[in-house]
Length: 196
Image 1 (cartoon, one colour):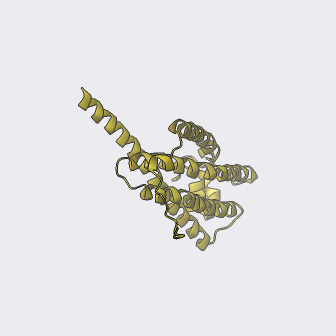
Image 2 (image 1 turned 90 degrees about the vertical axis):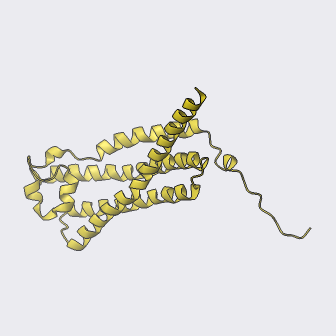
Image 3 (image 1 turned 45 degrees about the vertical axis):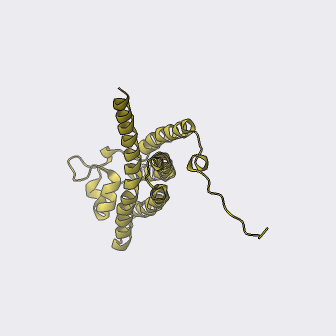
């Protein structure tokens, strides 16, 4: 015995052997929660003046914080309270959407790995989803300060960069599951046509 240990490679089907039916159940539950919490995290567009240039209150707040009195019908404690409430719900949403995106990417990556798509790429995309959430948290914290009167350009620039960073990182987390689904559909149709 030389004392040297040799690691035995674990086959993919054992390493990621979580039954798909459980993963689908969790993913569907997360999607339902995403929809519910996402609606709560979206302030009523009716808070804005009619015919304005913005359709979303938080976007208006971020883009032109110095023009709050002109962009909103009433810039009072009631409006501020509704915006804060939406942002608090959004903090919960930030916990949900990276989790559901990561799970969908894991499921798609596991499937695509069986068809020669490196799982390492899927793993990188999975790890980007919590990072997107961190960008979102930064954006929300700054918006809460904007509601209280913050108008400093440096913080607003950070908020806008955070918004761009968030969507940039979320995008591959949406694209990978779509590619996985389309691949699954294509293979099902292709295999069906060959058996006819």
